[in-house]
Image (cartoon, rainbow, N blue to C red; front, side):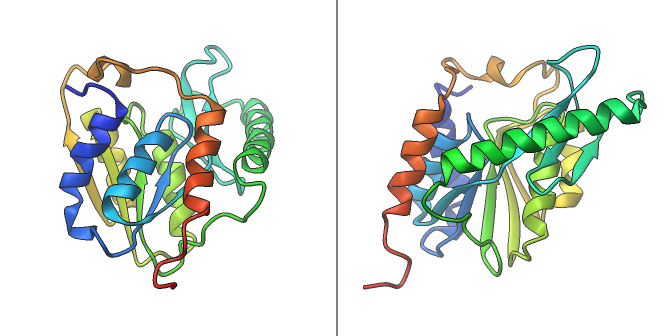
Amino acid sequence: MFRDRLDAAAQLAKALDAWRGRNPLVLAIPRGAVPMGAALAEALGGDLDVVLVHKLSSRWNPEYAIGAVDEGGWSFVSDASEDDEAWVEAEKARRVQQLRERRALYSPERPAVDARGRVVIVVDDGLATGATMVAALHAVRAQSPQRLICALPVAAPDSLARVEPYADEIVCLDKPWGFRAVGQFYQHFDQVEDEEVVNCLRRFARRPAAGSE
């Protein structure tokens, strides 16, 4: 369906054209969505930053997300079968520490961009379980944005339904049945490295603020 993440971002930009020139704040979920977020912010004339969340892994399968946590420590557990409270708390503490380290790496020279009173577009390259997006939207909502938009190229229909209550608006280009993994909808789905994330954020950090001379 998509050649790569930049193709997906270009298609999302068309779907979000109503916000072009209105200085939206695009918050990307690292790492994969950051190049997408940069392309989207460029197309819409907005700002770019990251919203840091991390999946909470099952004690039985580290690849399976039982929920997610944001950098402030708020967590979302989506799998009721994971009832080992000690495991969940330990996993949450590990992931929060990783998020703090990631924030220090990604934004060493400036604080996170304030979402208060802004039109905020939270973007990811796809929605599988929805846990990380729920945590991301919850974290941004706590900052009192003017409007909170969830933008996705593709999503599993049941997961999208789980996310909908957390956003003011959902923009999703496709909701196919038979969803197995995000990567199946991209011809090229290469891993994004930290260096590329940092470069994207630095490029936008050097831009003058909207309305400045």
